Image (cartoon, rainbow over all chains, first blue to last red; front, side, top):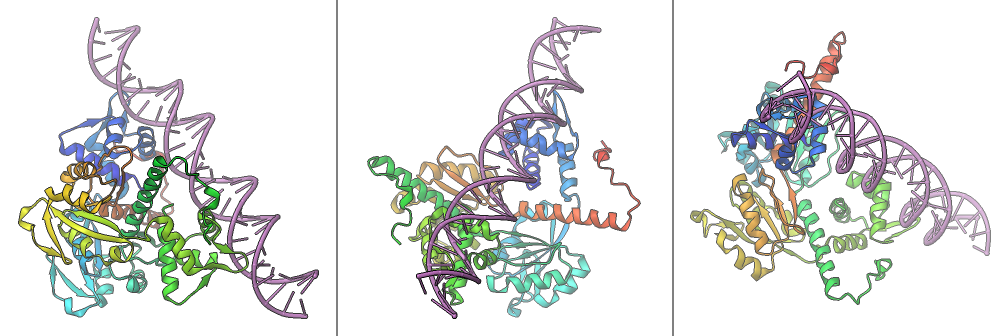
Length: 221
Length: 221
DNA sequence: AGGAGTTTGTGAACGCGAGAACAAAACGAG
DNA sequence: CTCGTTTTGTTCTCGCGTTCACAAACTCCT
């Protein structure tokens, strides 16, 4: 489930506040979900709670980490050391949450040798060597859209089976390879969409005599 | 719908390749979705296609942009000019897709005046003045988790009604305010989860004599 | 020891989105 | 003008995920 990492983070936050035990209500509130959904998600992993008491924070934390697979570090390569690549390489959350950046790659040979967050930038052609040396299964694409498909193909050929794609492009990969896409401007556009609908609602509130005319959408064609 | 921005980007890509008209199959392939779903989404906006022909790329592009609300630029403020804030401020996709960064804010007064992507960094306390001057409705939080809730509160008080939150924290906002959350390490953890499941599948393939024992999950408690 | 109070785990109903399938409409050829 | 072809817009069904509601189980107090 895609919510397990959210629960894990919420549990970590509780643990840091010194809380040893919590109910499903507490954890659900911290994670921002419904408590019934949370209980059902956790019951899918096994019976780790105690009725009448709740969940042991540290124990549940370990069990979720084990389920996700972040009890040991995953080696990760980042390709494309532009602004975003820099930010990702410096992001401390990776290190502390089960990931280790083993290499930064960039097609621009001018950048080779540059040190980012203590890791040297290497030529993109080193991908295969690095991937096999460190058994890299997870790759991050932070290149421009035009290069994304090529990078993905090379990654897959080098044995990468999970890709996190920040490039604004749809990439296609063979069966068995997972891709997750994060597109910053799409997130903003979704917000803009809601913003605009709020504005329309507001306009109608102020002029309730105007009809809603849903059937006339597109009447200007 | 959250898929409209994806369609818009796919249409832009088609237009840049000189394609004037496309069928729902073509566009669906470019956007990476099912064609029936795409047609249903578009029909929700109105009847912008021609049976037997398809959709006019530019016309549909404009209609989707109008629906999303990105026919004019939205002013945006970014709070927290660390690594990620830098990357966001420099991200050209915002500018070209309907957003204009009107201010960069940071609580650290050492950064005040620093120029990032041609925009000066200003003190966080200028938020209210900037928000009212530019009628800012959309804010981006790129601060550490600890500061996220405070920043969100101040944003809401300053009239911001849509927030894009990159901080690894759940923030609570009043009714009517939209929040979207992007968490980089959670995306990676989801990949790690799939990775681990692949590894287990693989291990079972190589040792088919091992039982699956789903009932023993948690047997080590 | 027993009962009251909590809290988990789960069975059942509900709602919603996805996909397949089809009818309506437009275009072109003869 | 008519028929065949193409493609949209829509209806219908199916399955999944979410939520409610409750029984089982555990603790604490008397």
